[in-house]
Image (cartoon, rainbow, N blue to C red; front, top):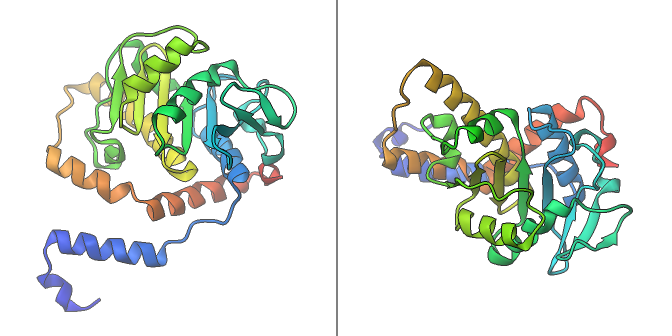
Length: 261
């Protein structure tokens, strides 16, 4: 490293690092279906298991379509080959079986947010515990700043989200943010890619766990808003999400690669 960098300010060093990341960080070459299956397995391995609850979807190639898991399969059973391609009415276009009827709110959210390519909803245990307290997620540690000022809160539980009313409510509640905490329910991620969605879901559950631990010991102190936003933008970059996803994929694939089939 050249000593010239000692004359650069923080913003210049950040921008230089972004250029280097975009040049050197490489994700893994998986299909959309493989990425979705890997996300199911990764989240299962990291505390997002709740039986058959939760849905993960990604937009399909044709407008108004998306990939999702088959109802009756747990996250640990999802493979690229048993995913379903459905339309907005949850009619199966490719694959066997049926989608989770609770996927209806995904259709509403995809309609409301053209920028969203992947939606993740789980009942991860620490997030679910926090939701029982009707408390918003607090981001007060640098590791969690990928979600800083980027998590909405829905304080009212609308019941089982299979109706159009729930879809409208959830789509409105998340607004333009990447994440939503649903009281008495769980988490929701709306991301620009499958890789980003997976990383945000992992960060959400970790932040919820840390919040419960910290609150049990004392009062959580806020971080400086400018520094929180700086850290958010530092972490939430496409190449960083891709390479982090590739790392978690390698961890999961060491247990077996059947999910890629």
